[in-house]
Amino acid sequence: MNKKVSIFQILNALILLFVMVSTLYPFLNLLAVSLTDVEYVSSLPGTAILPKEPTLRTYIALLKTPFVRRAFFNSVYITVVATAINIFLTIITAYVLARGDFFGKRAYTIFLIIPMLFNPGIIPNYMLIKNLGLINSYWSVILPGAINVYYTMLLRNLFLGVPKSVFEAAEIDGAGHWKSIWKIAVPLAKPGVITISLFYAIYHWNDYFKPMIYLSDPNKWPLQVLLRQFIVSADKASLFGPLQSVLYSQGETALPFRSLQASIIIITVIPILTLYPILLRYFSVGIVSGAEKG
Image (cartoon, rainbow, N blue to C red; front, side, top):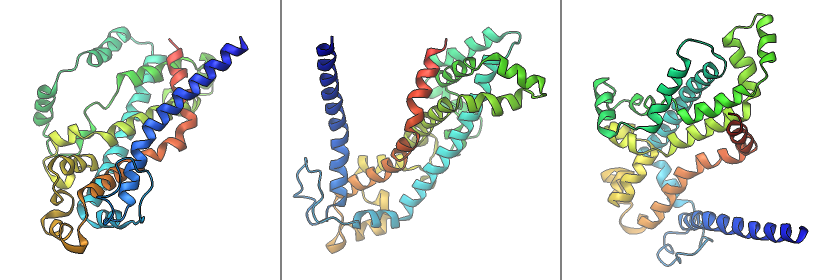
């Protein structure tokens, strides 16, 4: 038995090592390209993970342009506001489904689950946003999908795991539902709440489709839309503007497309990537606990 376990552990470690390398390697390659001096970018192998003549020149040029800075702060604003609304509505909905005892509770639950199974499609969603007058507004990106039913059910299961005696004791002490949510349910389900918040934040940070459809003003574009426009059009004007793009396309100040591509991708990935080490200790506990309760 010990021999079998040992073989399994070795195979498991090798598989995980392969997955880690295959995931990390492209990121290290992009990082190497972004840090390599522009004179050596064209000769840098596609498999390189170490920069040649490291420099921050491309990053400085990108962060100096108002287009990138504006898109970055747009992404931060959309992510923070949308995640706050998401988690607030998810918490109170999950609490009602877990603790509430009201007429039509089953029908209400089914009503929530139906949109999760049947998506109305792009055109009805667009018509709805248009009729609400939200086109070219940040709210057109923030409000749709304000509650994820799957995450709500996970959080509901976590709240169901809290002993009823705890809530009953709080009620005896005069606590209402509002106080029970924020003083009892949320603190006791903290790993799940943080994990779901992370999922919401990642979704909003990486989302480019809704902003691309609903936001016609380039000044309101998040970083992901700016990145897509640059990658698809291969035009430096989308990053620097018509005048500055000429400056960074000729002579000694020229910046290669490959270097710009790698740098803007790194700028886009790094902020959300830094959240993982901070919240990692909550991740497995929150998801497993929510999935185990039925």
